[in-house]
Amino acid sequence: MSKTTRASLFLFASIVMLNTGVAVAAGDTARGETIATQGNGAGALACVTCHGPDGKGNSAAGFPDIAGLNAGYFGKQLHDYANGARKNPIMQPFASALSESDIQAVAAYYQSLASPVSPVLQQTPDPDNQGEWLAMRGDWDNDIPACNQCHGPNGMGVGDSFPALSGQHASYLKAQLIAWRTGSRDNDPNQLMKGIAERLSEQQISAITEYYATLPEQLSVQAKAKESR
Amino acid sequence: MNLWKSSLSVVASSVSVLAVSTLVNAAEPKVDYQKELPAAPEGQVSFEPPQERDIPDNQYGDMVRQGRDLFVNTQQLRGENVFNGQNCVNCHLDAGRLASSAPMWAAFGMYPAYRGKNDKVNTLSERIQGCFTYSMNGIPPESGDGTLVAMETYFHWLSTGAPINQALPGRGYVKLEKPEGGYDRERGGKLYTAQCAVCHGDDGNGQQVAGQVVFPPLWGDGAYNWGAGMHRVNTAAGFIKANMPLGKPNSLSDQDAWDLAAFVNSHERPQDPRRRNQDSLDSTAKTFHNHDGFYGKELNGKRMGDHDNYGENPGATSK
Image (cartoon, rainbow over all chains, first blue to last red; front, side, top):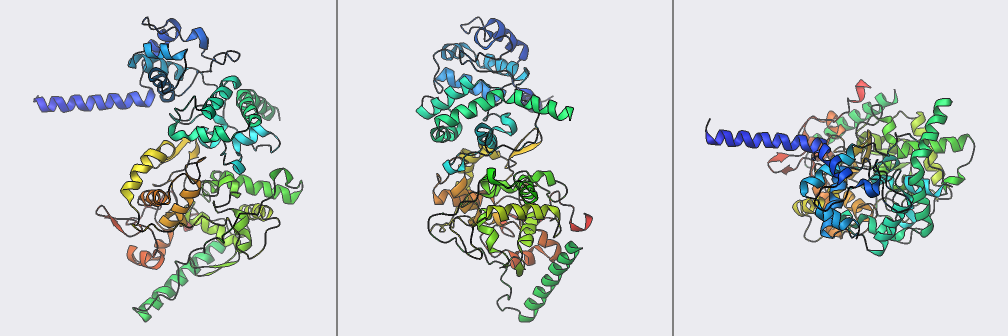
């Protein structure tokens, strides 16, 4: 076999490998689980210390639910913590202690966990339920699109850039909206969140964060009601 | 039956156009297929549609709600009347309520109206059927069909208190002066990558989740076809300027909006359904496409619209 043939075969093989990697999630899930439960032995503490054994976080402490989070979004946040694009004194040292392959592994592991996202039911929002209305219809008098227009039906998340909101702790969601508004968080693509957070009233922030935090329960109640009918 | 009749009349009118152009030869075409909506009147948008909590609780109200639900989730008609990945609400934001996003309350009172697009006075039903044919790359519901009744009832309710036969500020999309230096697809492509691809994808396919379209496709089989108003560069520029990116209205310069519109609309999309009744791409382009668009134009050595790909649409006869 000539050198060039071998080289091109190798290239072909690595492209195939890359493609497969992207389709699933680039990281090694088993290695990710080890880091999540035991740390990486190089300065990153076990994720479960704060985010809990199932990745569900802690509402009172404002630690987010990271179970089922999209791996691309997850990886970007860790990179941003490490390089300071997203500022957080707790996460910064841990993220900095993770290697590139560690980040991919942890991201793949958490994506593989049960996500808080519930099955999609077609429902019509109630104009008198402020949170539900904001999520599904927005507040166009103030140039606020419906949250679900980017975060997907029931805020289940879309791709690498629009994380799931459904089931996320209200305390965490609220802290992020305020961080965008004050400018202490600014790692959103094209500042898409910044303007929206600035235009949301305090009252709307409370309503929308409560809505998403309790959405999985609301949906399961709806689903049961539908079954028993 | 009506569908058959309307396709007959399309055939008839295209035949007469051909006849006219053969007879008169080099003279101006008699039918102006290119006539566009006039600019919305200047001035503050003052009309406010009623609030949804005030939809009456009776049969009329039920029909209003049904129309609204079809408007925001038009994909429930996929495979029946809709043959691409679009919902009405993609181009008519806030369920058809938002000014400068072609709101329904500004359209309702303007019909019946003469439309150059098919050279006749169109009722509101026919106008909506046009949306199905082109923007939804679909097969329109027949006149009197429950779908059209529901949509018209919703528009009627949205227009509560609006004047009849009087153009209102906020109608249609904003009209942007064409930049002196024209527009540039390549510049638009760079902007697209920076500003639009995060939602609509590098391939223009949009994004779906759990089988639902979240970000609509902008070109390719899932997009509006070559006959839709949005394929015109000026129309898309007006929409983009006032509405894109979502949550950042009017953040792009006029030049940016034109460049982006040119980039998006210089991609292939399902064939113009009027091509079925035309002899050639040339005649279709000459009859229906004397405007700011890329249909029939040569780009990178290939003519746009030179194909018989009608997307998922099986054709009116196979309904």
